[in-house]
Length: 431
Image (cartoon, rainbow, N blue to C red; front, top):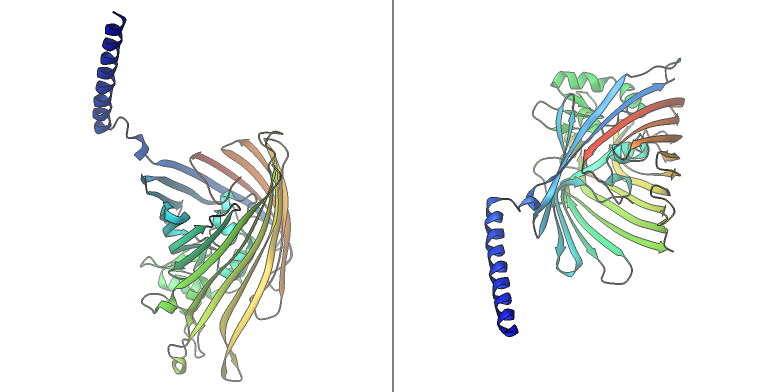
């Protein structure tokens, strides 16, 4: 009798499981269980108010809405991940990132292709609102025209050993930096050459941060805008765009490793470089098709302290990033056109301490060679304090003092930033 009961029980169980499978398949077809295809969506609002004494008594540039950043991402299928990042400003919309990521290739390989924050240095992987301070490092603006959001592909390989080491090889359309951080240095540097605004107005270009959008949709840097000037003397070499040889593309690489010191301390070490052999071409008729190269190189060391059991919101980080550039220029001397390559470098250092859930404070300093051919050095230092209203919004106050000869020498600036986020949002190697 007991044997018959067991057989009936197993038969009923088998029928129930089969029917459940059929119902689940029908529900999947109707889209009830297809939520894995719905993307993660997030938006961040970033606004800044400033005061400075660059022109005597303290004055303000007004309320600067740096933008609302919209990010959308999801798994395409089991093989790839798709992400897009659009910056919305009062002047329109601008694509910051749109890339596919293939994270599960054989032999520990990973492929990223599209428009992305280039895997270069440390802070280049962060948008300005996700940095612990309000202002982007000025050294990026001088050496790379801002942060590098480049179009191309990156192949990464994690070595199959017990210690984390990742090697990245990349190819990009070209070296092109941009920024929407309308800091005091960017505005003062542009104001020192009023012809930029005159040229922009003549061609109908609109200013976005420290670059311009032409009427045909092209993004123009300061150098590209200067190349449009009419002069009896040879103009500044022109950045190469459009159809070009393979030497006109940019190629890069990065080596990254992390060292665990106990349970609470992590040290990140990285070295990276991007090189474009034909970066600019001469506009002098006698030097037709003569080109100049550009090399960007970087080394960074970052130390993180994140206790596992002490507190939910308690951490400390400090680091230093060295950035340099080796770039060709044309100089005019005694009616001769002279080719000159200049090697400039400097560093940006910071620390950030979060003792409690609400409060966070720190400081920064940078020291680097100027690009004005005058052998000047730029120095800036400052501090910041952040009050986190919640996990999703904060208010930050930042103080900076500039020692930039011929531009901002002994100038103070105070900036107050407000940020609010909804949904999913992440940048860089965040802890």
